[in-house]
Length: 479
Length: 161
Image 1 (cartoon, each protein chain N blue to C red):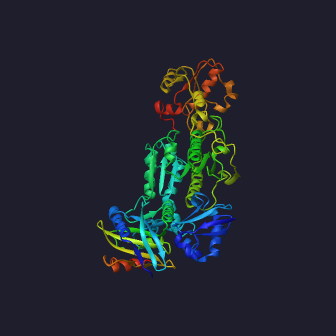
Image 2: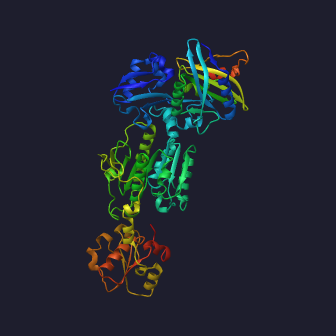
Image 3: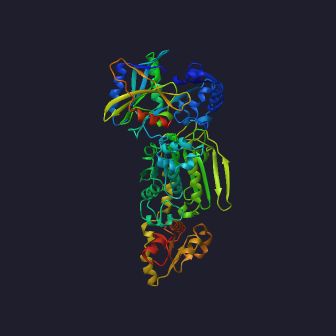
């Protein structure tokens, strides 16, 4: 490839006092090497002793800064023009001042600074990076903690939730003393302690179609640590629309996935999964459980990718879906491709603004399925009164056997929801029946199903065994 | 070393700008002609300091502003000769930071501004080895005293290089 390199005034004496030089190369790196081969005198003004482009030298291919392309790997075609721009900076400062890092920062990041792939320049890049972590839960915890420690300058945190005891098994940015505290504030305190240099911006809100573009606007890289499909599609579409990389991770039980979506060269989440799964089919961590350590692994894969993107080094997960199975301790990877028909990042996109993601993911249908008319619900206290009065009430527990092993209501019978059809012969439609699960959602589905096939004396225990423990019998453990 | 000649209006413009932005640093481009006997600065363009923090001791000229300066020089039939910036409450001597961010050939004019009042103005050029700045004497008519800041402090600052 023959390309033209425009030389700035001060460097023209090194190339024979001309304003441009023709060189050969398929990438910016190759073209620059060719330039150095022809005019070695220019080398020390463009590259440092380690061969890294000097921090104040910027390269443009046509009108685009290569830092926004593929840096030195940016591909060139004939007639492309590379422009060398000295970014002019200066100012008074102590001799040990370094490139915008204080002495304390230099001590803090010394293990980064001595690696040529990072160095002063890379650390400065990390410091100027602005990263948004969506969620401060299982994935968001290790992500935010390590990014803060690594010296990411600006870290945005989005979460609307408060810390619950059941979070502590995996959400290590929150501690026991934080239970009940707002997650963004608890996370901010932890980050402050790890690295006070980090500018933490909290967004205490649920990311929505209304606020997503406004929130994303101030960040360069987005890391998605959410646990539900509507937000995952929302983050993906918002990243495509604003042109920001989406560092994705997801976890379930013993398995995790990670990738980097929404890069111009690679697919987005929708290329991979054009439609969400039917509502209710894929359980959340709250329903299906998750190995506490798992989000540590996947969140740190995400953090690694964020740091690489900010530094512009290495090979990211663009175009690859990494799959991890903790039980077999195996990593696998799948090549994934951009879908030209993709409704958001394809050649003829049909989605040009953010949509209603709850609707898209069928949440209203799911909620309808889980809603029980008030007259078919029974309060925990009312059930307790009936039992105490010796009334004949059959208590059906539709949770999993593992949950039944943790806690149960006396004299209840277990038929897990997925096996309800096979277990029907154990039910007597003439008897009064109360169905319960953990919090009342699965049992609502069971009640609606049983009423649909002719059970008339069946009711749903409001709030499940959780409410039973709180309102009737504290001896039953909550989980 | 050739001298650099700076026109009176250009010099006044740099001094006024340094006073106006005090206690923050100002910056801008030097335009003029490069002749065999040295550079002649006839015009200056002030440029917005692109730093959002530490503006009292740092300045940054963005790529887009650099390109605009080169284009503007072209448009006026002049050459981009270098840049100026101010050192609020600090001698007019280049810092290590200046050295690490310098290009050869360009002239770097520094004006010291003490308590809001512009004082010494000096000009510097990076050596071929990138190891230090050498002073490029500013040629003046007899009206202004030759100013080089505090010579001790200046040499101390140079040692960092």
